[in-house]
Each structure stands twice: as C-alpha cells, then as structure tokens.
Image (tube, rainbow, N blue to C red):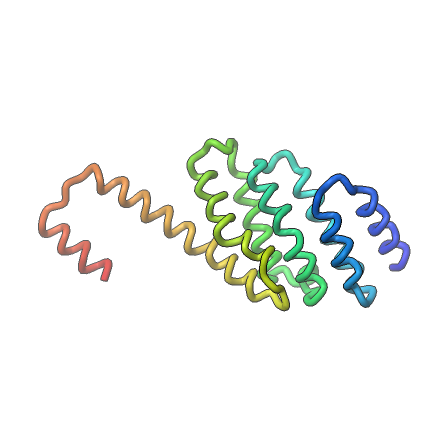
Length: 178
C-alpha cells in the first residue's frame, strides 16, 4: 500500500501545470492517515483524467476542475467516496460526466443550460466548508430533479406560447398547477 501511495503521490506531483496545485499542496498536508492519503491521491488522479478528457466539452471540464478543492476536502473527511457506489459526491460526478459526454457541441442549447445549472448548483461547493457529503447530496438533487423539471417547463411554455388557450383550458391549467 505504501508503494502505491508513493507512486500516486509522485505522479500527481509531476503534473504541476494547473493552477489548483497550491490548493492541492495545502490540502495534501491535511492527510493524517494512509486511508486519507490514498483517497486524496486517487481523487487527484481521477480529476486530472476527467479534466484532460477531450470528449467532455471544455465548459464541463472547467466545472470539474473548479470542483476539485471540494472533492479533495470531502475525501479527507469521508473516504467512503470510493467504496460506496451511492455516495452523493460520486453520483454527482457521474451525473456530470455522463450528461457531459452526451453533448456534441457547446453551442447546443441544452448544453448551455446544463453548464449554467452546473455553475449555479455545483460551483458553489468549491467555496463552502465541506465536512460531510450533504452539500453534494443537495447539488445532486438539483441536477437530477430541478434542472430536468425546468427543461420540461420551458418546453411546455414554448409549446403553449404558439397555442392560444381557451378560457376553459386556462382554468384547467390553473387548477392543475395549484
């Protein structure tokens, strides 16, 4: 295990081309046991791989890169990220990358809306204190439920805007919407 940790540390230390390196160094000093060190170094490798993955649109790679400090702080307090497939931060990262791989172009309106939602719901994680997976759970909830619902509402509004409602249809819509 010590050999693996040493190799992972060496690999991530060699990649100093990116800005978050100083944040990485500060957070790396917060590792107090082998489990934290291993989780930290694996997370660094995972983030590096995602940020370099050109199949993801640059805007999504930027969000993942900005998320790095929050994810690194998380694995220092919650090493379950790697052994719990239902961990909120893990599911959130999967959701971001899976949806991100579906977009062919940054000019796609759905992609633009998705990136905006990432800026709104995910980017704030890098600026708050992380002492549990709870903030990631909330961000995941927003990505899975709030954003798709907003898309449905926009599609509905777009469809209705080209159709004049009768008075009866308007009352029915008002009744259903509460």
